[in-house]
Image (cartoon, rainbow, N blue to C red; front, side, top):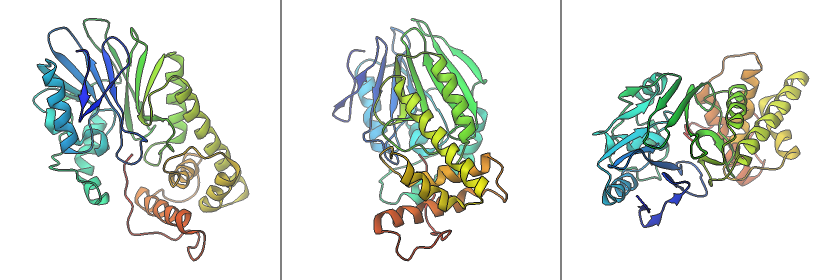
Length: 317
């Protein structure tokens, strides 16, 4: 396999056996997909899938056109922009964690309803058929893939894929490049721990869930952002400030990451919960607040009041 063209665009070769299909700049539902050549007889593994039926069908045709005879999928987490393509490849193994499989069943195709401007095509939620342990080795002809599960990072269960022989790590949505991280459904503290683990692998190439492929600076950049979020949340809690007020202070006092800054308030809310803030933590309610924050950013702070919510807004990274 020398060159993969995904929907008319060439995938980026990262090493002898690994490619990445990037969707830039990496906003909502613009996730990255990895292609790993497992052997010399046509076995291929995808790291995640695209959100839409059309792009996944294009990808399958491209890979098969280059001689792939067996295609498996490794899901990094349950969000639909990474898993909706599973059904296109369900004749092969779909690999993931038990928690990811359970969360896919629970969430279903909710993302379709929450992102009405995207033509997802025919969505059939297809959970993993092969469940992996927290630390598992997937053999290849050239060295193998190391699968590591992290609990409560981006979501309740995130799987990273590391190819030590080729120095490439796929982080899923634990790491982001040029895109604001989204940790509402996981944990700031857990994400920090996961990123520190990944840095200790000393990868040469890092493929984030969203944003451009790069090096370990992606891990350090995401880690720095999350430490800033945690620092502001700690100060806000110590003064009795609200999530809303703390998010305003965070945006005034830090350099913005880039794409989708509305996630800042969601991440501050998650940090408050991680640090033991009083009250039940409601993901749906905080998603609605994030949508209100987004409107405020576009229209200015006018009539929207702190703590107000919008009835819409369930998003997945």
